[in-house]
Image (tube, rainbow, N blue to C red; front, side, top):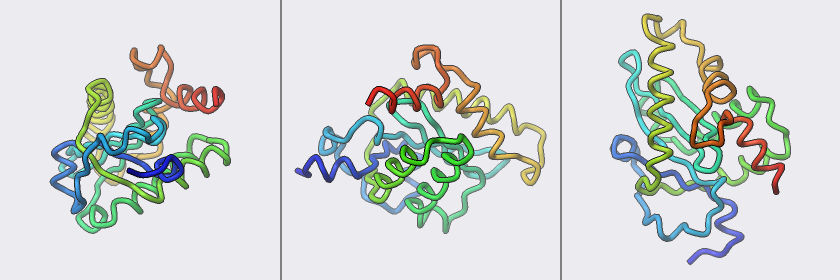
Length: 178
């Protein structure tokens, strides 16, 4: 078993079967990561938009989400780095306070993949997929604005499972309670 200090500096991503098929990483037993704080637990799924593979990543505690469009095979081979770099960009886009962003990015240094375990998060990820599909419909891939999509999905969408707050507000509220 890992110590609390170790689990506090770790991301756990519940990978759907589609994501598991894309990555060359071991799928760990979720029970080994019960001590990982909710804020460091995520779910990930692969969807196809405009005939390109996209990753939707969603935080279990807050619903904060990241949609990465048009991932290629080599990006899946280095997915941990892609996720960390993309989260850095998301935090900048959303104007997340530097201390919070740094704390989250430090935890992303080590990523473990498990099976999914939260149906509510999977349902919210499906909503993100539908909104994103609607947004990109009819657009050429080159014309899709990923920043606009991620901003909308985090600051405008409201999920009933998040106390009627958008994911960004839920994320900020999480850290204000700490």
